[in-house]
Image (cartoon, rainbow, N blue to C red):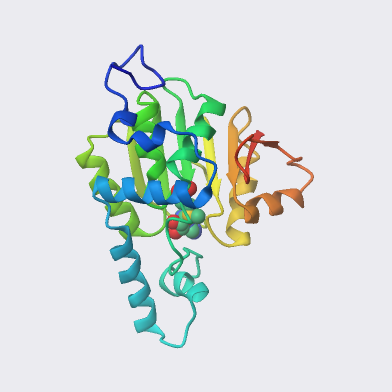
Length: 239
Ligand SMILES: C[S@@+](CC[C@H](N)C(=O)[O-])C[C@H]1O[C@@H](n2cnc3c(N)ncnc32)[C@H](O)[C@@H]1O
């Protein structure tokens, strides 16, 4: 029998790759990775499509004359929550999370914070591969957080949680060893969080996506970061 790839000395259990064999394969094609992640989400019982459709309908009820880039701000007090986009595009795939965490190798007890966490996929990934880490996902859209916490409860996740929070309104970051940002909102809101991160000396920031990275490139404080091999748009910054 095989065991999970990490923290195996601490917790013996069959690997999740027995349940989802596609996760054991190395896949380069983005669409295939997304398709597999979407199948896993469905198998876990997520109702992502339905929830996103409800959000879209709500926005159109408020103002039928609007386009998709206006729906998030319309529903969420000006914040860009990407309502109307395919949520599989907005989440880091399970395969990419494997590559990412294989590079940063969190230790038991480390805390990972996802700033703009969607449906909390990272927490589920960590539960499978790095069960002794802790995870906090902060997300503005309550419907996404409630759905994530429903699945977390069913999977009996330990030390992993999702919370509703507005990153544009916080003045202090939650404690963490690794912070992750995947283009969570408007440039103004991302800049605010980047300024708070400047005080988190000794921690690691992981940035996925062009909006955040391009903003950082305009500020000499950040430098270029370290690009993660095999991932197109993920960079590490030592704070
Ligand atoms: C691109 S998704 C990334 C999801 C997740 N981090 C992942 O990689 O799978 C960005 C998320 O940030 C959320 N977001 C946008 N503005 C926010 C804010 N002001 N506070 C908290 N979350 C926010 C959006 O609702 C969306 O779910």
